[in-house]
Length: 211
Image (cartoon, rainbow, N blue to C red):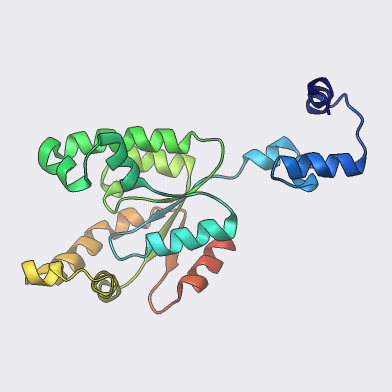
């Protein structure tokens, strides 16, 4: 098809057969149904932002949810590392929390401004920054993956990380206190999904039923 005819199709002035229309949809990597949907229906979907401290399951659930919903999956902390040009630990040790928060807000603004929605695994402390958390809640569907302190702990250990107990005998009590301190902030999310004693598939199906 000529560029002129494609332009006529885009403006609604062209006349096309069903067979050619299906071929155009296939070439664009979509379906005839999606192309015929009202533009509002294609733009109302929001990014999905998963919240929770380490061990909440944001990476495992986020990756599986993104596959199910056919969305990109993005680890926000990895994007911050890329933007800063440093590992996350070095960002804090060399530049401090203020710099980290600034980069975090810049990354969030960019990700939430993308036309195609994505599933975001956010940093556990994002709820402590009022500006970033407000931005996230305004532009994304926020979901807290809630679990017991024991489950958070066991998931981190199951990933092969023995450092929490090796380096700090009070680490579990500190984790419990951290969860208690942040629970009211996490509870401001659009939805709360219980993850303790449940499989990734069960959690993903629950979230998919909400969005």
